[in-house]
Image (tube, rainbow, N blue to C red; front, top):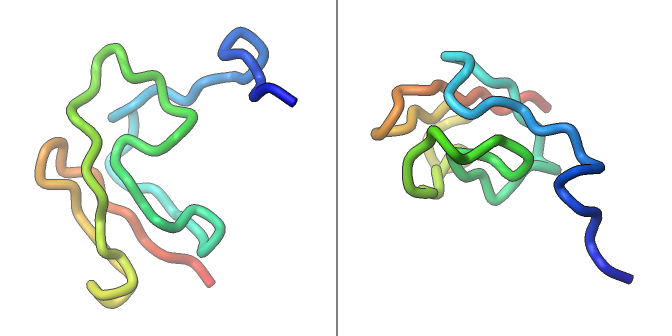
Length: 69
């Protein structure tokens, strides 16, 4: 089975918000996250949100990610 085409999956604008709530299902966490439109974004970086105590900040765009359990 092939993955869904990008035309069928609605994209979230990258860097559109300053704070994102994520769950353990989103791990490993990267910024921008899968499903974000990448045309105006930065290189993908992985954030150690578990090691950071449940909160991480992207060094490129300053987006804050909070792990919600």
